[in-house]
Image (cartoon, rainbow, N blue to C red; front, side):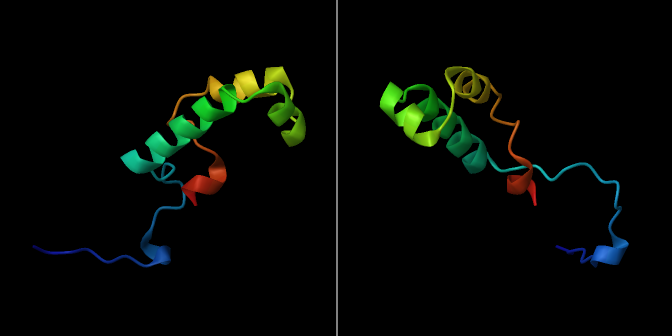
Length: 70
């Protein structure tokens, strides 16, 4: 089996974002589910409003933070 090796100069700079693996999607889904299940005192401790938590928890697993894709 042949393997292609590319340098950064060979890569297209307008390429789509890298995809995350299934483990990352599952981890993100679980984190968002746990965030939605937090009690009021935990939410206050994080400094997040109910609206912010609801917005984050309702995001799709493939809608990952930009830092995860780097």
